[in-house]
Image 1 (cartoon, rainbow, N blue to C red):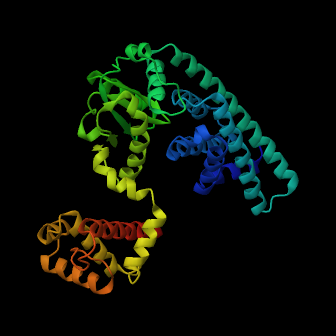
Image 2: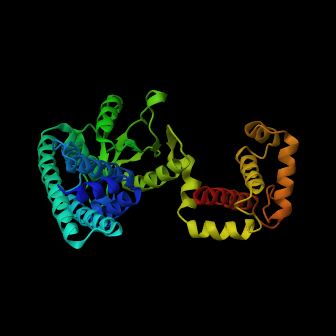
Image 3: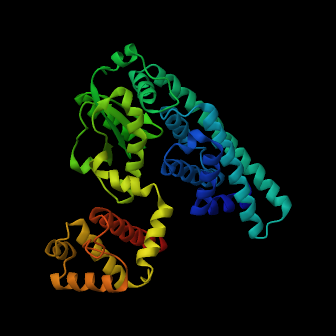
Length: 380
């Protein structure tokens, strides 16, 4: 292996932008890969690049990361064709990024060609181990009850699958006439998913990986130790035939709760308003610009005004409660609310516009305040 190949691969493994490019190429070229959480894709790509640098440094040919990728994708229900489309796209992007790195450091074309050969040889070996591990895992899964559980779940929840018949439902313990909760979690690691599946299924229901996330259908929402609780969103109990409509709503609500860094179990109905609002970011930006235009995102004082107002609304417009949560004096809360009202068009008490709905005015104000804070957080 050339010193150039080693140097360039090590640089790429340490560059988060390269990981982003490779992940983006894989997701763009494989819809099945794109349905998985992006963090799941990044986890494998980053590990493979690091393993590649070790391999070119004269390592012992450890392809365990590639084998884990193949096994995980089989467990997650990604087809071999969909997996390979993502692998091939990622392979091309790795070589493209490597050539850019080499040229940026003044490497001549002849040496770059040697680098391409070295890296392509490694990536080809990675691909062989991915395929072999995928087929091994696929064979093992086909012999277990977990495979049937996963097939039934995907049929119940994913629109392009065949809805399970009564016999299939019966084999996994589901009754067509009963009502069940749809449960979607943020767990994507297959090993942790298997552990939680076994624990949750003791209370009834069926759990497995659907589109890369641990998902399930059960008569009761799962529960477990607080220190090991993942983020869960649960729908109201509904007939099995209604769960295809509940599932995408739970996925959208999960993204909202995850952005708030929430943990534990959250009913879908508790997240209904935030989920609906999150589906319209352009409208949120328009509303925020209209109501809060005078505020400067770089101003610490303006950030305090918005944070205080949002806390005030979140706690039922109770000044004392907001002051306790923020660890400030109630008079400070009053002062900040007054200053925000002077600077902007926000109506925190719903009395400035008697002909408007009090509830809608509050929703608009809350949405604008939350969007302004989120925008500032992303800009930092």
